[in-house]
Each structure stands twice: as C-alpha cells, then as structure tokens.
Image (cartoon, rainbow, N blue to C red; front, side, top):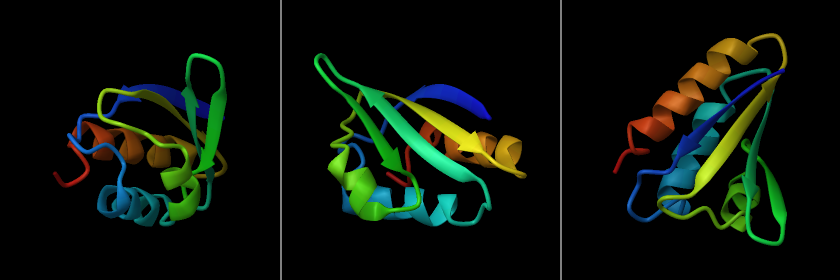
Length: 91
C-alpha cells in the first residue's frame, strides 16, 4: 500500500468533468485506489474508480486529499494519479 497527499488545483474542484477524468484514469489500473479527505468533523473515503463516489466526497479547489493505492501496480497508479491532480485535471 502506498499513499500521498495532494492539493486540488482545479478552480472548480472535482465536479463532473474532472471527476470523470480522474475516475477514467483510476480505472486503467488493477490496484484499488481510494481518495481520503479529512474535514473538520468527519472523514470521507471515496472509491476513485466510481464517479458517484468521488462526486459524493465534495472535493473542492484547495482541498488536500490523500490518494491511497493498493495492489500490483500501486506505485505507477499513485504516481499517475498524483500527476493528474497536479496538472489540474484538464482545467
């Protein structure tokens, strides 16, 4: 299992189009990929391969998320997912 934190740069956060791109990228890997976001009084875990799950996490611009990858291609998956977020998710 590997994980890393990243801040959402996309000005609109993970709304439908960026969330779709995020999930489409996650689905390319065999690893289980989870997005974790800690808020003031709750913690949210989302399946990165499910658009509804990612949208339900209400991830906004400036939020810090942790991407957790677990499986045979976890290193590559984590690297690519972090880079995707750093690149702004196609803003």
